[in-house]
Image 1 (cartoon, rainbow, N blue to C red):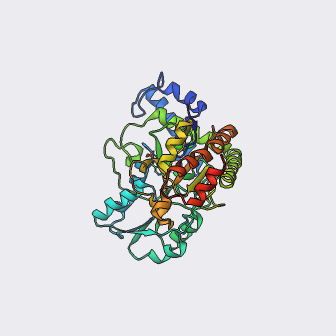
Image 2 (tube, rainbow, N blue to C red; image 1 turned 90 degrees about the vertical axis):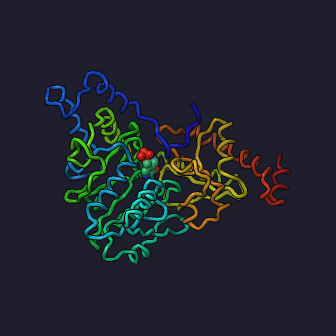
Image 3 (cartoon, rainbow, N blue to C red; image 1 turned 60 degrees about the vertical axis):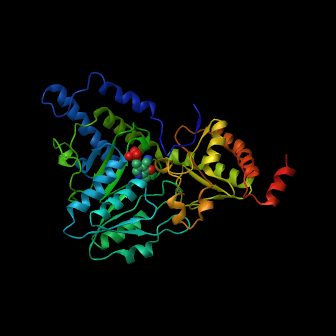
Length: 396
Ligand code: PMP
């Protein structure tokens, strides 16, 4: 197993979660739709799990939680579902320029269906321009969707302020809470949000299960039609072991988040200061303070992030250049470009994302191997200026 520093792409499932799930693969495997006693057991645990996930975000009614197959589906249900339900009211939707690719592609899909999409610009830290948001709202705006934080550079968005603007203008507000699910608590009774995308793996539960929080009274048209499970919002037999794991993960996260966040911030800050101090021409992308506790996103001049990942791979370190879901494209990150970076700057990125299992020795290891890896690539790069090459050659 590598020194795993790619927790934004996937997190290990907590052992306590695995133990909780196992009985639901073995004896307690029944379908909650069945009328027999085994079906009742499945229904009971489904509803108990719903309560636990509702409690995770302080939702007043467990029925506000709709279980789905994950974040992509929740985003589809929220945005396409609301667009179709409210289209008689208006056809204008606002997202930000730096949303996850699932939301960007949903927006493109809706544009083809005749909806109008506006994209809020961001500042150089990747934080949305609230002043611009107000200007984008018009009489046909039905929905604002902004993720809780950047899943790449880790900058935290002003969710409370967006919620106030949406409420004042009587517009629905959806947030994809995936980037911050393990590091920022959500309380929908203190900050009103109409729809929230949640996923199990982002809080150390199994993959393939997630939820959409749908505030009481908010409506969406279903996108999966069938037997009418999940109050008709999401048909298909519920994934009981997955949902049990998700609920257990939410319970653990709720209890352990404050302590865990302090721990992660300590590691993150050590990593950031270590890297910026040792490596010349290195930069931190994203906001220096308003950033996720588990995110360190660097930029190294004159080299390519992909080559750096391969160098780190040789040292058994697993990291990323940015969002895993966009990693197969050769395009520079849309987030970094929206922040005003040049293409060549955007290409030299490294995303180190920490998690519950990250240890101080992992951070020490990356601080130890990164300077050499960057140096090796810079010596080969035609972009490296002669002064820097000279410095590298002097210091053996
Ligand atoms: N939204 C965000 C912000 C993400 O980072 C991701 C990927 N983890 C998704 C949505 C999609 O998640 P999934 O691939 O699990 O559906």
